[in-house]
Length: 264
Ligand SMILES: Cc1cc2nc3c(=O)[nH]c(=O)nc-3n(C[C@H](O)[C@H](O)[C@H](O)COP(=O)(O)OP(=O)(O)OC[C@H]3O[C@@H](n4cnc5c(N)ncnc54)[C@H](O)[C@@H]3O)c2cc1C
Image (spheres, rainbow, N blue to C red):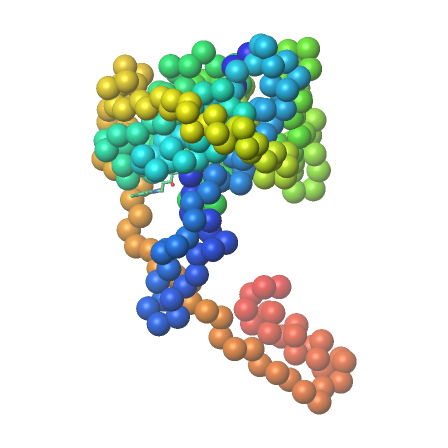
């Protein structure tokens, strides 16, 4: 059984701060990490492999610039068998459509049974790439996985909804998008880190996957959406402190304010 885990390298958005003078993001010194939902997806794949190490192979696949190699080395150090970096200038500036088309073309070069993506990347935050890949591959998708098991060749997923869960059973091939809380990722081992430095990373450029690509669907030119402007949200205005009110008057004042803002 072959599992492909999509791993995106992202800036650690918990470390991104705003410059109070210019109101712009301070990116310097912000570490790059594996997207948290993807780390959990990788852990899911490694647990499936732990059950049957001889017959399960885990591929970590990332699309990005050369530096995404660090995320892939981390995946190898955790226990992934192979790492594939999809990288080419032609893929730059892609929106979710172009990203998913490109990643799909790469996956089509792998004999996959299960594809795992994170629910959402903490930088782009769209949660679109996983389901789009499933659509392009023409396989079913189960998103928002909170627990994943493979039993007797079937994949059993606990899918989270706002107010309930569904337990779904599916055949492969299948795509799952995992939540960060799906599986606590294991630490890299010292030996794993050492060996990951020696392992080769396969790099696929446009030439390697173009047989599965429609070239009008890649990079900035193949992106139906464009980020037109990007700016920080304005800070909220200072609150108003009402004093010397009875409990009833306080409740009325709060209700009036909520109505004024169309919250209720
Ligand atoms: C220069 C530049 C220009 C951009 N221009 C646009 C634009 O014009 N319009 C627009 O909409 N967006 C634009 N983006 C954002 C970019 O499209 C998104 O970062 C990308 O499409 C992925 O979407 P997301 O981060 O929301 O991922 P999500 O859909 O939230 O990711 C879900 C999951 O998909 C997988 N995944 C996503 N991306 C990758 C990847 N690269 N490699 C491996 N797995 C991945 C991961 O498993 C991830 O957890 C631009 C980005 C750059 C750097």
